[in-house]
Length: 110
Image 1: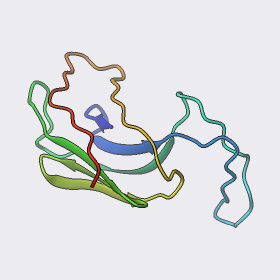
Image 2: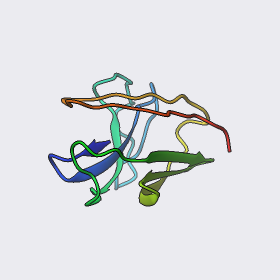
Image 3: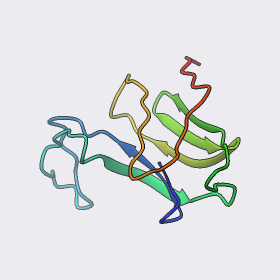
């Protein structure tokens, strides 16, 4: 997610029904419940200076095994390892956005 109002790039994942994670002390926490309104933040970073309203950007998300990389204009901004899901799907969304357009969308295996 590109969030210019907070000057952040954020990578979220859908929660997995019934998945039990552990806190910093190693104790189990409440099992996850998946709902569109409660994704889990995996990582975040400062938004690139190239991100500006009205400017086209090249966005890429690469997933190889448990490694996820997010790139803006060919520069890696976020990277994280997460093995929660072994397969999935791609989707686009806009939250409180205006004048957002997507073009030339491609989903391809590596």
